[in-house]
Length: 295
Image (cartoon, rainbow, N blue to C red; front, side, top):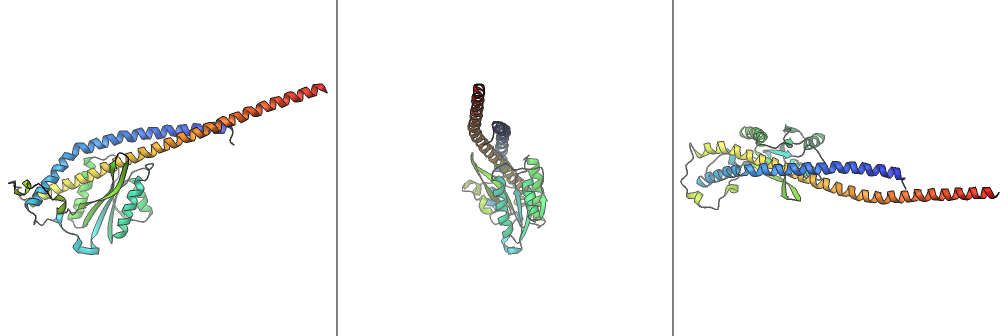
């Protein structure tokens, strides 16, 4: 059994760690609320863009546009881009592991994968395992905002327009509810007409005109729509990271409290044993002195 001083030292160390985990929990909680508000404030704009694309698709269902082209014709020769969003740091439970695992599965299944990463955890992992990284969007995951999403979107659109990419996917983490999140893959390009199917028939017969043409409108709207998808994924990932870190820190704090309880019992036993030892030594000394006097 450790002595009382050693146990006290361990208890102080655990208490110091608890202060850190509590602080990290509070910081993540604050960041989570801020991120969700950012997403809620911008969602109406991107829903409007989606509705406009939906109207165009309904008006001209047979229109050929390179943002709706099929990449399946190229078969195994198609170049598939994967944008993988991880965190810049750990201590967030299985958050990073789940995204990297999903990304690696799809990278292995692709003949010509093009890897783009956001987040230092992902970058370090893929570099270590020999995956070539085409684009590394740094300083993004800890500060998701529209400006950064536009920069990423612009680069993606340039590569797609130049046919350097035939398909583009986002691999990120979506919040399911207040206690769970899961890795998800979202197709960015090319768009599928099926995802813009509208059950409301008023769009099909409405008299709107798109000037100068439907194709020209799509050329301007789709990049903003892709920007919205990227921005939403960044905020979802950031929110999921903070949620995962909150849960990890809460679990660490609870474990620390349990350890303190056990150490407190152990400390009291050590003190009791030390006191008993001291009393025994005093009694033994007194008896020895008494016996000495008799002789």
